[in-house]
Amino acid sequence: MTVGRKNNATLTARRYNSIALRMNLKPYLKSRQKLIDRALDRYLPKENAKPPTIHRAMRYSLFAGGKRLRPVLCLAAAEACGGKIDGALPLACALECIHTYSLVHDDLPSMDNDDLRRGRPTCHKVFGDGIAVLAGDALLTIAFEIVSRAKPTPRYNMSVLLREVAVAAGSQKLIAGQVADLEAERKQTSRAQLQYIHENKTAAILTTTVRLGAMSANANPKQLAAITKFGRALGLAFQVIDDILDVTQTSEKLGKSAGKDVAAQKATYPAIIGLEKSRAEAKRLTRQAHSALSIFGAKAEALYGLANYLLERDY
Ligand code: GRG
Image 1 (cartoon, rainbow, N blue to C red):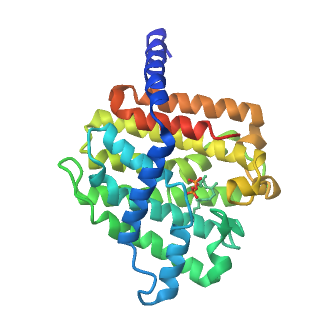
Image 2: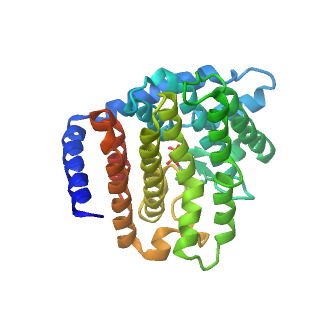
Image 3: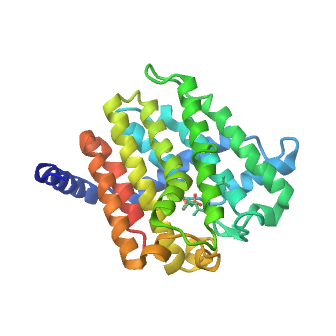
């Protein structure tokens, strides 16, 4: 980094820090989560819609108390690019459905075999393996139906939006990351392989989340590139933090089984580079995410605050 760019990043950080101090993130998150929950409730078939079992299972996992970080970030990205949250809402909800599908499938006995998710028994524990597989499938499928409700913008038509979602959820991104993760268990994993897993399993969906928000605001190429940089860095930071929390927190606090990564000999940052270096890496990536926001000025204050919020989770 040149001295000039470094100064620029420091200035941006100072400016945003003073804005972020003024922004009270808790009520902001609460009101956004409410808005997203209401929209998801509208988009999903009712529990008693035929066949009720599948709709109960979909809703059980979708309304289990997730933090809604991806949709909140999608709406904030739309605002950073000068758009309105209404235009981004279907895209935000679609991504939450994909995220929930991935959690339901990840928890299955044939994958991570987990009993606890979002503080309650996992989908397959309540509905059985077959229905949990189908609930995941149905959540993935409905995501595309929800995307089709979005209003395309002059630079991004419906096929661009659909492709963006399909690629992020597909065999070369989210599923690629999950495959690499499964194959890395109980094996020596290099830092480069670990980065591949994190980029695809976690950062790809997070990047698409913010890109879709930007697209709903008809972002120009420079804005979209900056949002993409932000999403990638934040996605990687998020996963490093998640790896740290798995080691340092209790199951009760996490709402999912803690210590599972170590037990399954998973490839994680703390396992490969140690806890202290992992913390430093999470901070470095968050700084990188912050400096990507410099072109947006005050419009990106929520994105800036959200990145800080993720970093400052108690770990
Ligand atoms: C099954 C194709 C397929 C993929 C599974 C989601 C996933 C990939 C694995 C789950 C385990 C994991 C560590 C995923 C990385 C992303 C992550 C940290 C998810 C948890 O996200 P939060 O904390 O969860 O936003 P909530 O419940 O708040 O939405």
